[in-house]
Image 1 (cartoon, rainbow, N blue to C red):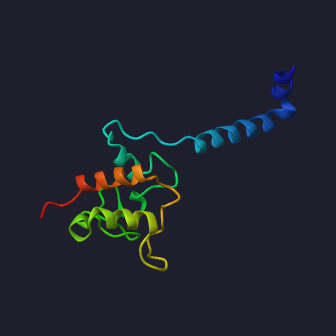
Image 2 (image 1 turned 135 degrees about the vertical axis):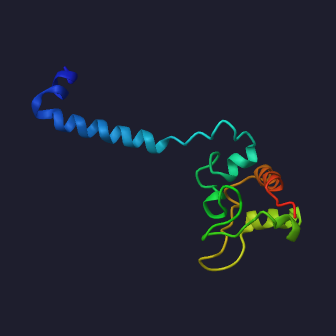
Image 3 (image 1 turned 120 degrees about the vertical axis):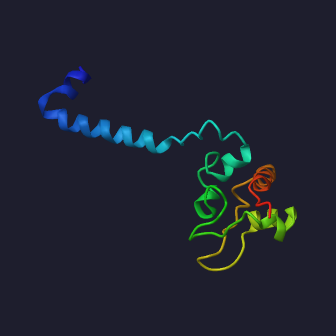
Length: 126
């Protein structure tokens, strides 16, 4: 009965609209799966695959070399110790538009440790 109603000529447009809306909603609600070679939990978090609102690569780029929105962090361990980096992740850094926002309400202590572990893998050797 419902199928006949939906497929009738008068309701085809509405049916198409409902299908399109449902498809769009399902596509938006799914998180992208990380590539198979991204197995490090810290890297997954850094790249935004673990939590929607934690995506370090959005500002620092996938390789950590920075972008217009965030600095290069491939030498950050030469400048700061791990405790200071954890503090920056949790509390943010700087003021204004260019500031790094705090993530204390978005990441756990374990996740901060995972991020620092990943940062160690992308540090420049020089």
